[in-house]
Image (tube, rainbow, N blue to C red; front, side):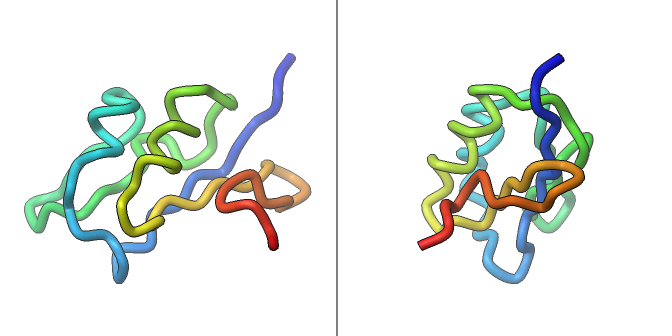
Length: 77
């Protein structure tokens, strides 16, 4: 079994570009205010979700390992 991730979107940073939906259409949705939300905050690790986080122009998407809380994206400096 692979890693499990916890995905969060900082809605104070999100600009509603919908890049996360472009990269991972099943993993994110926009609300009526065009703010992104993860469909399932706790999810299996996937290249699409990582691409969505990396593709966010304002880095509003954060991914941590479920359980340990270790940063997956953005990487810790």
